[in-house]
Image (cartoon, rainbow, N blue to C red; front, side):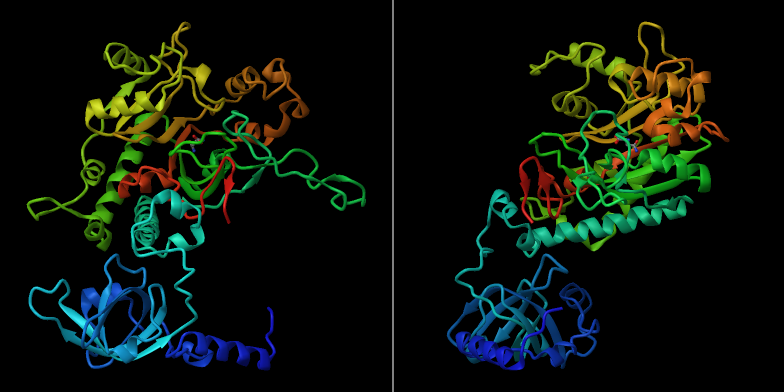
Length: 505
Ligand SMILES: NC(=O)C[C@H](N)C(=O)O
């Protein structure tokens, strides 16, 4: 920790005081007095203060209006999209500007009828926490474009909507955690540094840099013995843990080195991944996806956030975004990939590309299929050739159309949210599938040596000793939040977004 010589600190404080005229700076000792007992503005607005004659508020000035006799300031603290109105004298308002961090003391008084707020703070004292040079503050009251705000992720969460997104993230995690606890799942943590490319798409960030001081013998060497990557999915490790404690889940950062410069892809994002043990029917896994999303959305609907995200119709009635209703209920259609291809090909839609059987679905096709059903829709049983090695062969596969027991959940206007599958739990078919993808050396499964199994020997081991049928899925958590908040680009959802060519701070 750096130390400042008392004389220097004093000089700095004097300079700041001079710069901000009447600003009353809070000393570090009184700052400690602002304990968690100071209620948030959300709580103040919802419940009122415990003692209306003595109210303390911490927050930031969101606007300030000077009238002839008094000044009005709106104070926000990120706990609510709304702000609290404070009435001050001109003298008290001196030194305050948009963005100033303040402590206000006063009395909680009813506003005149028809005012936006039922009560306001009649201020008796104002203290400013720290300096604020309004002339250089890049965040302004006027609306700023998402693109502009993206250039300063360290500041943009101070805006009311972006702080709402942070609270949406937190409440959503709490609801999912509650749901999965009630369902008997164990939350786990899986590694970020891994030795495998789970999806086999080669979109891995290599972290095993060569460093002169890294080798144990002092010579130049990789930090680890061989190639290591930032994880692209926790799935393989979750599968190991699912054989230890039953149903498991994790919400972890995930990394993909894809050069997709789109509104739906990031190089670092959060994925909720879940594995279910002793399950041999993919329907059970899809039921869990559906139940988890629906219960989570219903929990959000009961929360304060629903009110904050509610939009007003022209007639003045409050309406929740349609998408919340879509996610909260219903039995979502399940169609096979083969049926989906048929629907696309007979649709007459002017797609950029019309996929043939065996090709992947693009975002335009995913959106179309969900919008056609006016609901989230599961597309199941994709061709093996376009899916990763770990998926279980469908029992309905024919020689011509080899498919796997997998599914994607597609949302209207948004496309893929979840991808999942039954896992190949039998030893020999798994080795054969890995050989087909070049992950294990060729040869008869029974005579493959540990060395020939390569980096994923440990994963093959799971099938050697007490293997069980199981399946799971991964849900793009930032995508879910973007859908709920009706924010089309997940660069607004992820607090410090990274994508090809961009890693701001
Ligand atoms: N856990 C999962 O099934 C997610 C899958 N591995 C994916 O990354 O798409």
